Length: 490
Image 1 (spheres, rainbow, N blue to C red):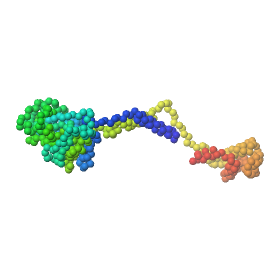
Image 2: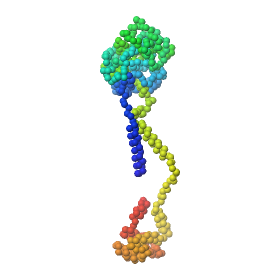
Image 3: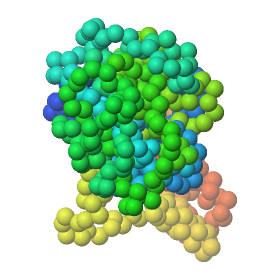
Image 4: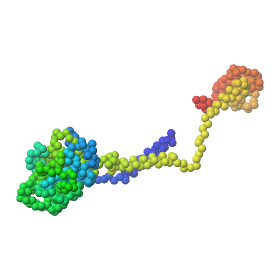
């Protein structure tokens, strides 16, 4: 037990030392401050630039919401058929690849609803032919911009009112975007551009006045009536819109123009357009749905209308895969990331493997197994007694016992072993209460039996009992011997 306790204490000490080393060497990472120039638009993020407040509100209000953490190609499978609305907020961390673009186009064309909220939406499926959607750049945030400071984010910003009553502006009196919100400018295009544009998030925004990779024609006087822009502004930036109808199998012609819901003289902030059987909603400012700005004016009401209204029974999915929260990441490891727990666990596993490996290897010459004698010391006595009983050699049994008893009595009397019976009995009687004659007679009977006088088993047992009684009365029995024999019997 003491050896096991030592091993257990050794393990405890080693684990404690490892934990101490990890605690001392661990450097706590400073919490990264949210920056508007590098925002985190994930619905898991509770900082000013995140969208967790909107997600939690929708979830607790009875909306069917989920976090989409798989590639967009899964939208074409059974799990994707349940999703009717997909929300993509801000600049993504994981770029869209060609498969994602194609899958998203097909999903929207089959009746899906895509909500793209970004100041420079560099990706959108094909728009209605005959129209171009450009983005007009405004003030850009800096590293000193604090997204949690409402006054700093909305300085010199006026409230925006709905352009017309629509489902997206239901119960919305005004919204308050940030001062970094861009504007969408819708322009009629007489003929589709012959230049094909590949699917993708690739940068389709140019500083020059170009759309679809070629110079945009100057709008005529009649065409300028379809443009929301009313003042002279620098050449707008372009949002990816149409593709060559010959190259793309998902081109849809429609007589309906993109619908502007909220905007001002500079352009639209919220608009949508049809694409196949579905619709695409563009919002030019993520601040309207972030944790910091969603509580301003009717921003929350607008966000609810964007996902389908307060009574929508459809499933709403927030794209987290392209925010770097895909299911390919180990959730357990991600939960303990930045802590010494994983290092401690790895060291413990390594320690256990080392112990198991060392126990299975020999470090010295082989040693024979210890031979444990299971026989009791009384087995010999029992065997001899049985032989003596079968051969009726009772004199031998008495000789074995009497010889030892006489030696003990002589030592107790203080005389030599070869002294006479009378002398031994006299000396013992003087030192104890035992009768001298009885002791001398007992010794005489034992010596007669040893010398060949016939004796029965009953008489031999009686003589042995008398000898044991003498030893017990004189206190001559060896306690260690008695205890050892009793333990061996058990």
